[in-house]
Image (cartoon, rainbow, N blue to C red; front, side, top):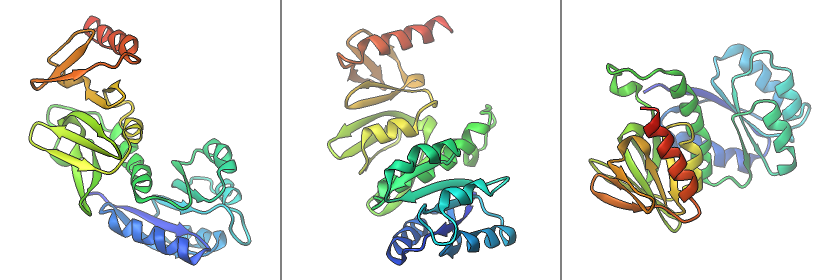
Length: 240
């Protein structure tokens, strides 16, 4: 498994402790160093190869956004801040994500999965793709991080504060909102067809204006989604 080296730039001890714990729970993240200010972070970047920075905005000596501007070739950056008003400036500086404190672990996991998504998007799939190179995400299941290959997913169903991810081999239940998964799966051939369902377009066996069949399961098409879903599916059939 490829590991991403990261540093944590945070001057609040409690916030740093929480984020360090989150980082240590993710198998593909390796924390290289904790920095209490941006000057120390600059020194660390000169000494270490870093793939990802978790960066607070309100730091002593040099503010987080100003720190980003000093970097000629910055690694990926996830901002962690208690102030949402800086989000637009952050995204203008091409940050990977913007997390509002206090950060929930599910939201943290969504952010770091984007790092893998971007790398996976750069890899062109072939018939001879090795299993370890296939696009995948990790989901929190009973305090374990379970790898799910995106091309194995049949459909995803919302169950209140949980979602059920179904593949041909198994189903898992993870505590995350369906909208968050929808964002994570953007540009990966998935389609929201109902307020409670996301489906893999490549796994569709048949469809009508009322429902979609995948692996023998009938999945309803929501009234508010019908026009968009039918247009998307009809375009897909015309392009084949």
